Amino acid sequence: ARLMKQNLPKVSVDVFEKSRGPGGRMAGKRFKEGRTDLGAQYITRPFELDPVSNAIYDDLLGAGILAPMPKGTIDGPDAFGAIGENYVAPDGMSSVVKELLSKSNATVTAGKLLTDLSLDKEGVLTVDGEICEYDVIVITVPV
Image (cartoon, rainbow, N blue to C red; front, top):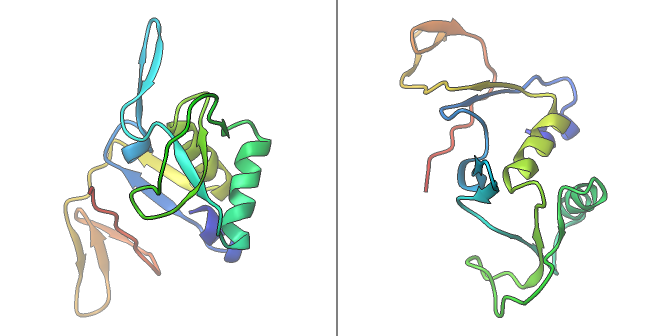
């Protein structure tokens, strides 16, 4: 959403999230005693990265959303073969998602499970029976 807004500033972005809030594999849980990350506990910034992605990491570090992993190391590449610097999110990994969405000016609708997308012969799009107007739809599927 952030990259779409950055590269296509006149585009409006709507995000429909089936959970109570965005985050997916970066979601966390709060307790009286604190919080815990349920999915990813750290994020790797590959040493070889394009300038656009580097700028996003720089923004997240500058805003205090990401911080260098305080102790220890993780040897070897990540699941995608990348080797780089590892970071944690002091306010939970979901704060990364929230920050990126806030920079996108996206409209986020939480608690919305989309079950039916239909396009009829005349080009009318309905989302769960409601007529909608979108130029592009991006759907992500849980891994």
